Image (cartoon, rainbow, N blue to C red; front, side):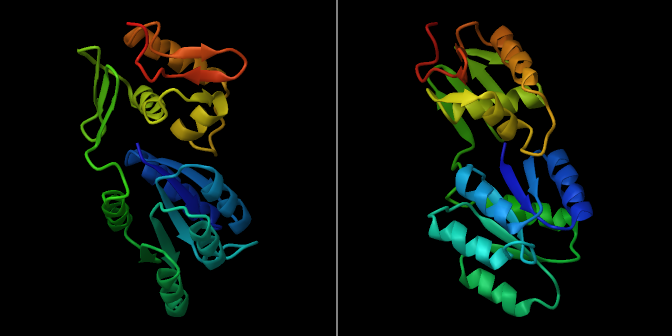
Length: 224
Protein backbone atom coordinates (compact mmCIF):
# COMPACT_ATOMS: atom_id res chain seq x y z
CA UNK A 1 0.00 0.00 0.00
CA UNK A 2 1.66 3.20 -1.18
CA UNK A 3 2.40 5.83 1.46
CA UNK A 4 1.91 9.41 0.29
CA UNK A 5 3.08 12.56 2.05
CA UNK A 6 0.69 15.46 1.44
CA UNK A 7 2.38 18.81 2.06
CA UNK A 8 -0.40 21.39 1.72
CA UNK A 9 -1.05 24.47 3.87
CA UNK A 10 -4.73 24.75 2.91
CA UNK A 11 -6.15 22.55 5.66
CA UNK A 12 -9.50 21.98 3.98
CA UNK A 13 -7.83 20.89 0.75
CA UNK A 14 -5.34 18.72 2.67
CA UNK A 15 -8.18 17.00 4.54
CA UNK A 16 -10.05 16.44 1.26
CA UNK A 17 -6.95 14.96 -0.36
CA UNK A 18 -6.23 12.70 2.61
CA UNK A 19 -9.78 11.37 2.73
CA UNK A 20 -9.90 10.77 -1.02
CA UNK A 21 -6.51 9.11 -1.22
CA UNK A 22 -7.32 6.89 1.74
CA UNK A 23 -10.49 5.77 -0.04
CA UNK A 24 -8.42 5.10 -3.17
CA UNK A 25 -6.23 2.66 -1.25
CA UNK A 26 -3.29 4.87 -0.30
CA UNK A 27 -1.93 5.64 3.16
CA UNK A 28 -1.68 9.46 3.38
CA UNK A 29 0.20 11.57 5.90
CA UNK A 30 -0.52 15.30 6.06
CA UNK A 31 1.66 18.25 7.04
CA UNK A 32 1.01 21.96 6.58
CA UNK A 33 4.42 23.67 6.41
CA UNK A 34 7.69 23.26 4.59
CA UNK A 35 9.87 22.63 7.65
CA UNK A 36 7.75 19.65 8.70
CA UNK A 37 7.52 18.41 5.10
CA UNK A 38 11.32 18.40 4.80
CA UNK A 39 11.75 16.51 8.06
CA UNK A 40 9.18 13.87 7.15
CA UNK A 41 10.46 13.38 3.61
CA UNK A 42 14.05 13.04 4.84
CA UNK A 43 13.36 10.74 7.79
CA UNK A 44 10.59 8.43 6.56
CA UNK A 45 10.12 6.08 3.63
CA UNK A 46 7.26 7.55 1.65
CA UNK A 47 6.49 6.19 -1.80
CA UNK A 48 5.47 9.61 -3.17
CA UNK A 49 5.27 13.25 -2.08
CA UNK A 50 2.42 15.53 -3.13
CA UNK A 51 3.97 18.95 -2.63
CA UNK A 52 2.33 22.38 -2.66
CA UNK A 53 4.75 25.06 -3.81
CA UNK A 54 3.28 27.79 -1.59
CA UNK A 55 4.09 26.32 1.82
CA UNK A 56 4.78 28.55 4.84
CA UNK A 57 7.99 28.27 6.81
CA UNK A 58 9.86 26.84 3.85
CA UNK A 59 8.50 27.04 0.33
CA UNK A 60 7.94 23.99 -1.83
CA UNK A 61 10.94 24.64 -4.08
CA UNK A 62 13.22 24.72 -1.06
CA UNK A 63 11.69 21.50 0.25
CA UNK A 64 12.16 19.86 -3.14
CA UNK A 65 15.81 20.87 -3.41
CA UNK A 66 16.52 19.70 0.13
CA UNK A 67 14.89 16.32 -0.41
CA UNK A 68 16.75 15.72 -3.65
CA UNK A 69 20.06 16.86 -2.15
CA UNK A 70 19.62 14.18 0.53
CA UNK A 71 19.39 11.57 -2.19
CA UNK A 72 15.69 10.79 -1.76
CA UNK A 73 14.43 9.36 -5.04
CA UNK A 74 10.69 8.96 -4.41
CA UNK A 75 8.42 10.59 -7.00
CA UNK A 76 7.43 14.17 -6.17
CA UNK A 77 4.31 15.69 -7.72
CA UNK A 78 3.92 19.43 -7.17
CA UNK A 79 0.64 21.30 -6.81
CA UNK A 80 0.71 24.67 -8.54
CA UNK A 81 -1.59 27.57 -9.31
CA UNK A 82 -2.41 28.90 -12.77
CA UNK A 83 -0.11 31.88 -12.21
CA UNK A 84 2.92 29.86 -11.10
CA UNK A 85 4.41 28.90 -14.44
CA UNK A 86 7.92 30.04 -13.52
CA UNK A 87 7.80 28.16 -10.22
CA UNK A 88 6.48 25.06 -11.95
CA UNK A 89 9.34 25.09 -14.45
CA UNK A 90 11.82 25.61 -11.61
CA UNK A 91 10.30 22.67 -9.72
CA UNK A 92 10.53 20.36 -12.74
CA UNK A 93 14.10 21.46 -13.35
CA UNK A 94 14.82 20.93 -9.65
CA UNK A 95 13.75 17.29 -9.62
CA UNK A 96 9.95 17.19 -9.49
CA UNK A 97 8.48 14.32 -11.51
CA UNK A 98 5.14 15.87 -12.43
CA UNK A 99 2.78 18.71 -11.60
CA UNK A 100 -0.95 19.23 -11.17
CA UNK A 101 -2.54 22.65 -11.56
CA UNK A 102 -5.20 23.86 -9.13
CA UNK A 103 -8.11 23.50 -9.39
CA UNK A 104 -7.87 19.89 -10.49
CA UNK A 105 -10.01 16.81 -11.02
CA UNK A 106 -9.44 14.37 -8.18
CA UNK A 107 -9.76 11.43 -10.57
CA UNK A 108 -7.06 12.90 -12.79
CA UNK A 109 -4.84 13.50 -9.77
CA UNK A 110 -5.16 9.87 -8.65
CA UNK A 111 -4.38 8.68 -12.17
CA UNK A 112 -1.26 10.84 -12.27
CA UNK A 113 -0.12 9.53 -8.87
CA UNK A 114 -0.67 5.93 -9.90
CA UNK A 115 1.30 6.53 -13.07
CA UNK A 116 4.23 7.87 -11.07
CA UNK A 117 4.06 4.96 -8.65
CA UNK A 118 4.36 2.54 -11.58
CA UNK A 119 7.76 3.93 -12.57
CA UNK A 120 10.82 1.64 -12.28
CA UNK A 121 11.72 3.16 -8.90
CA UNK A 122 8.69 1.53 -7.33
CA UNK A 123 7.98 -2.17 -6.74
CA UNK A 124 8.36 -3.65 -10.25
CA UNK A 125 6.07 -6.68 -10.06
CA UNK A 126 3.63 -5.90 -7.27
CA UNK A 127 4.76 -9.10 -5.52
CA UNK A 128 6.48 -9.47 -2.17
CA UNK A 129 8.00 -12.69 -0.91
CA UNK A 130 9.71 -13.30 2.43
CA UNK A 131 10.43 -16.95 3.14
CA UNK A 132 7.01 -18.70 3.19
CA UNK A 133 5.01 -15.46 2.87
CA UNK A 134 3.84 -14.32 -0.56
CA UNK A 135 1.85 -11.12 -1.07
CA UNK A 136 0.29 -9.96 -4.32
CA UNK A 137 0.11 -6.22 -3.60
CA UNK A 138 -2.01 -5.27 -6.61
CA UNK A 139 -4.37 -8.23 -6.29
CA UNK A 140 -4.43 -8.03 -2.48
CA UNK A 141 -3.88 -11.77 -2.12
CA UNK A 142 -1.78 -13.43 0.58
CA UNK A 143 -0.35 -16.92 0.92
CA UNK A 144 1.50 -18.14 4.01
CA UNK A 145 3.19 -21.53 4.16
CA UNK A 146 1.26 -22.62 1.09
CA UNK A 147 -2.20 -21.67 2.35
CA UNK A 148 -4.27 -18.62 1.28
CA UNK A 149 -4.97 -16.10 4.04
CA UNK A 150 -7.94 -13.73 4.10
CA UNK A 151 -6.98 -10.33 5.51
CA UNK A 152 -8.84 -7.11 6.17
CA UNK A 153 -7.66 -3.85 4.60
CA UNK A 154 -5.61 -2.83 7.67
CA UNK A 155 -4.30 -6.32 8.34
CA UNK A 156 -3.01 -6.47 4.77
CA UNK A 157 -1.37 -3.05 5.15
CA UNK A 158 0.35 -4.06 8.39
CA UNK A 159 1.58 -7.36 7.00
CA UNK A 160 2.86 -5.58 3.91
CA UNK A 161 4.79 -3.22 6.19
CA UNK A 162 6.41 -6.17 7.97
CA UNK A 163 7.16 -7.88 4.65
CA UNK A 164 8.95 -4.78 3.36
CA UNK A 165 11.17 -4.75 6.46
CA UNK A 166 12.00 -8.42 7.13
CA UNK A 167 14.09 -9.01 10.23
CA UNK A 168 13.78 -5.35 11.26
CA UNK A 169 12.25 -4.36 14.59
CA UNK A 170 9.36 -1.95 14.01
CA UNK A 171 8.06 0.15 16.87
CA UNK A 172 4.36 0.70 17.46
CA UNK A 173 4.75 4.32 16.35
CA UNK A 174 6.41 3.21 13.10
CA UNK A 175 3.61 0.75 12.40
CA UNK A 176 0.94 3.37 13.10
CA UNK A 177 2.76 5.75 10.76
CA UNK A 178 2.96 3.18 7.95
CA UNK A 179 -0.56 1.78 8.27
CA UNK A 180 -2.65 4.71 9.49
CA UNK A 181 -0.46 7.74 8.69
CA UNK A 182 1.33 10.23 10.93
CA UNK A 183 -1.82 12.29 11.40
CA UNK A 184 -3.88 9.39 12.75
CA UNK A 185 -4.87 9.48 16.42
CA UNK A 186 -4.85 5.70 16.91
CA UNK A 187 -3.42 4.62 20.25
CA UNK A 188 -0.49 2.22 20.30
CA UNK A 189 -2.73 -0.60 21.59
CA UNK A 190 -4.36 -0.82 18.17
CA UNK A 191 -1.06 -2.23 16.88
CA UNK A 192 -1.16 -5.00 19.50
CA UNK A 193 -4.71 -5.87 18.44
CA UNK A 194 -3.76 -6.15 14.77
CA UNK A 195 -0.62 -8.16 15.50
CA UNK A 196 -2.75 -10.58 17.52
CA UNK A 197 -5.17 -10.83 14.60
CA UNK A 198 -2.33 -11.54 12.16
CA UNK A 199 -0.87 -14.21 14.40
CA UNK A 200 -4.29 -15.85 14.57
CA UNK A 201 -4.56 -15.93 10.78
CA UNK A 202 -0.91 -16.80 10.03
CA UNK A 203 0.85 -18.53 12.92
CA UNK A 204 1.83 -17.69 16.48
CA UNK A 205 5.50 -17.52 15.46
CA UNK A 206 4.85 -15.40 12.35
CA UNK A 207 5.51 -12.13 14.17
CA UNK A 208 7.98 -11.86 17.04
CA UNK A 209 7.59 -9.57 20.05
CA UNK A 210 10.70 -7.58 20.94
CA UNK A 211 9.93 -6.64 24.51
CA UNK A 212 9.99 -2.93 25.21
CA UNK A 213 10.57 -2.05 21.55
CA UNK A 214 8.00 -3.44 19.13
CA UNK A 215 7.56 -6.32 16.68
CA UNK A 216 9.56 -8.11 14.01
CA UNK A 217 8.66 -10.33 11.07
CA UNK A 218 11.50 -12.91 10.92
CA UNK A 219 13.43 -12.88 7.67
CA UNK A 220 13.22 -16.69 7.67
CA UNK A 221 9.43 -16.63 8.11
CA UNK A 222 9.45 -18.08 11.63
CA UNK A 223 10.20 -21.49 12.96
CA UNK A 224 7.38 -23.21 11.10
